[in-house]
Image (cartoon, rainbow, N blue to C red; front, side, top):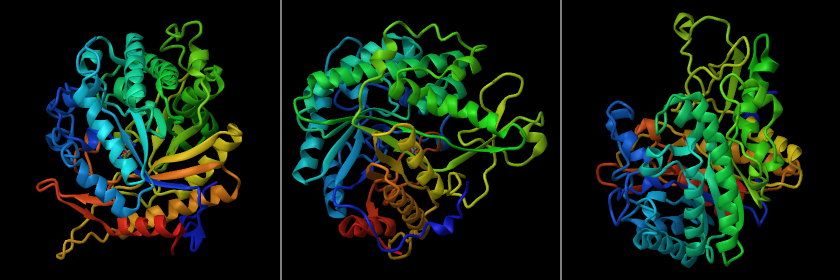
Length: 476
Ligand code: IFM
């Protein structure tokens, strides 16, 4: 059921004392310093340097220059009052060459970041993999190859030993859906492959990498961190005849392909049947599902919008001329006789063209806590891109972003009131940054980055969030 978004304007809603407010970034999107202190290329360096693949030819070579401005950014986080900071670690900074062991300079960068956070009383939430696979591993097969799982476990062991005394939450993977399907199936993300069978192999190898990495982190961490994984869930609406079937298929492919093995220790039977013409899933070996199915302390939930799906009616998007664009660009998986496509969504929309639907967040959180009773949840990403304008006095009056955040915090509060064990919320993103295929064209930050001068300016939404974190109260 879709609830009118004007219902989501909470006023005076108070979050509990132990609810964590944070903000998030990812290594390739903010760091820059792409060739410094031993770092070698990741698949996103290769992809972004390939003409025509990223808007405007933008790359992450410099990004927000966070690699050099880390102290300034830490002070900014403290000034805003962040209680936690979710960052990711660039794998090719840590293990720059095959079999070469840990790069001390790379490890030291993250060690200083973690120390800087703790000095400012900000909890470090570290993600091992936010899409920047070392290029040398892609050259050997990437996530379609099982050998990448072993390399990930070695990398996890290095980071567990280096930071496991101080990191408070470890997240293995961010949005493996994107890594597998966009990277190996649809091709809009690095490494840009269009191989449906490889995409399914990547799904399994990412799930397996999560399991092995958790074991390695647990063995190496000497502190008492929480362990987690972050998924981007598809909150689905069906359309037309066969709506329920369209929803079932995409739910299997996008959601249950991950929650099944990670949280139940099995792949859904309908997923295996739906994809049988593409793969026999022979890459799943004895014992894999036990390895994947590790207990986690908290499940990370990334949410931006809902998606509407329908069984394809045989009319091409061009013929229909309805501006068709899937949530992630295009027609979905071949099923049996009819394929499923993503339908245009009614507005309002953000600058990404994503519909604004806070009810979807409440519904998702309640649904997850019903599907997985006892599983604590954390919103690890939520936020919005808008075409910000800088006022003559230099300020950024991003009322639309503030409104988006207010509605989604209201949705989270409603989920809490309905009994969901929701531990916290990370706004995406702290800084405007490299938005993958969109380059620097889309701004998600609550802090503006001028990509010519690299100057940071807290937007009105950042000041709004600062008040929320201080008062724990969603104002009207
Ligand atoms: O910028 C991305 C992030 O890297 C992963 N989740 C979605 C964000 C917005 O597209």
